[in-house]
Length: 103
Image (cartoon, rainbow, N blue to C red; front, side, top):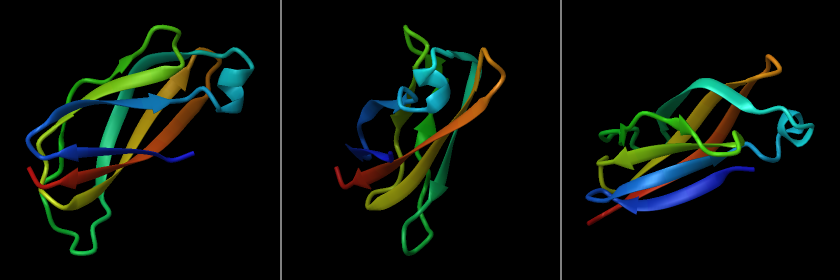
């Protein structure tokens, strides 16, 4: 399931990547290690400054990853991807969309 966050360029927001519906997590595996978050431009123009991505952290319960996002160009759409390992040895990728609107 793709999650969506709408933020203004001047805002600083926490984006939560929810891994709870992945089969591994349903079967009681948990996230571990250092998650990696990336942003890929999905705007028609392909232009724009990406959001600044803070250091992601695994949330309590080890089923979600929190990441602070700031900045970015107005009127841009970004595909956000969070890659994280599990204790059981899987590597999972959770995706979401970030819509940046005008201030």
